[in-house]
Length: 366
Figure 1: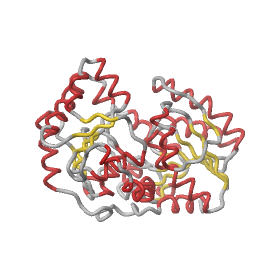
Figure 2: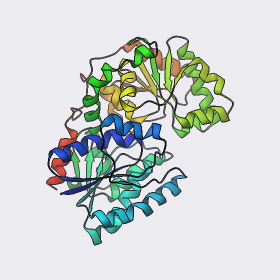
Figure 3: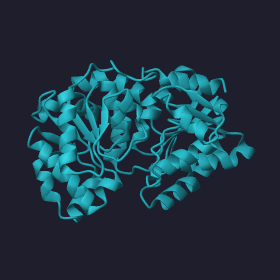
Figure 4: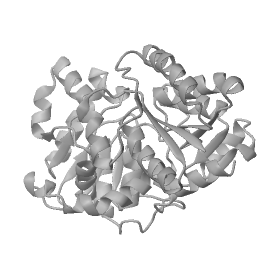
């Protein structure tokens, strides 16, 4: 079997690393395509190094642009690669523009090349069509041949959209494979001591979604809320380049001075920061899952989540919507009062570090 695995942006890297390793272990041919959707080395290359991902066989270098521009560039650059490689499976992960673009090219060339598409992390739904990721998720699932779901609550979403159950397979959460693999190394780092932090006595925060950072009023509320939290417990925020740019553009850079701002972190350092936190405040999808696996209380700064299992079976909660300073502060206090749980103690089914093995087995037997 020849499997072509696509990675486009940082959220993909933690998902493709264990899949590539499982393909290698199973003696199957693997081809890695990096679309270059994340073009900043701090946001891409460092993750490849941390996770031990091999050099990509193809790097498309598409860079930034609008959603339409980026999707189109990936499609144009990916088509000749697909003709050259002629894989049995094209494996796309997550919900970034590269995921949709490569799935579209593959399904259009399937009659000619015979390649099938497998979507890892299928069936997640937020119900919010304002999110570009929701569009990517739904369309990718509709055109993929095999839908590999991370949690049991994904299947009803797919069935409700008319997708036959025979195209769906539950495999568990492959990103948690990476977390458990890297956790011992993350705990050996001296990151907390370098930052002057003590385990369980600080808040880790991330902020990058357009809905929170591209609107001055929304960004102002979140930064003020983080500042209020910082009055009670130090808040460490690895600052996303997009957030930094918007804060400067909107004249809010001084609000960041109440926070402990650090440069964007590689995967293992970010895992170390998350693992040691008393509470995580975030608008990231992946951190909702990671905090659940780690037993760290999480407050998600969004109106809804496509990962509701992190609330029903995990350590996550949504801040009240619309976001307000008092609402975020109250959610933080509730999460802090709940306290940390034993890592791995309340993980949903299939979040056991063996999802990649199940993915490869399914590819081989489909």
